[in-house]
Image 1 (cartoon, helix red, strand yellow):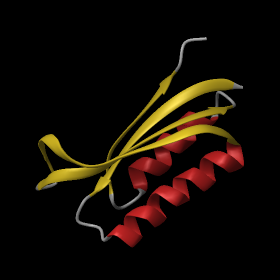
Image 2: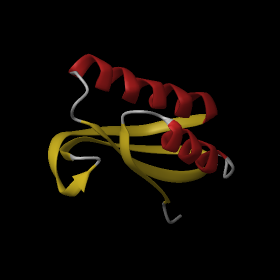
Image 3: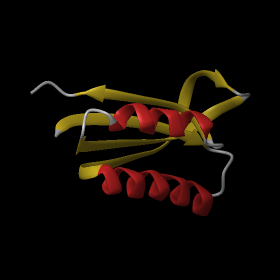
Image 4: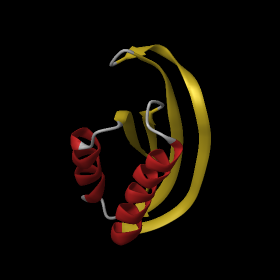
Amino acid sequence: MAKYETMLITSAALDEEASVALVAKFKTLIENNGTIDSVDEWGKRRLAYPINDENEGIYTVIKFQSAPEFPAELDRIYKITDGVLRSMIIAEAE
């Protein structure tokens, strides 16, 4: 099991309930394929530049452990999910 960290920026245009449900979907997906070490909700923040005509996003950072194949699948799902403005997955140094 390798250690990873993912940052997810969801649309601030979503209502609070939809945003929480979207993050919960990804938490469940990660838990089904590994273990979550920590979840850090940064909340709504101003973006450095507009993305899809939006100036704010809701930031969430999740640290997790999984098999090395899983982050590619997680990234694919991020890219096809409506409401996700940006995402990034990095491997933590051992």
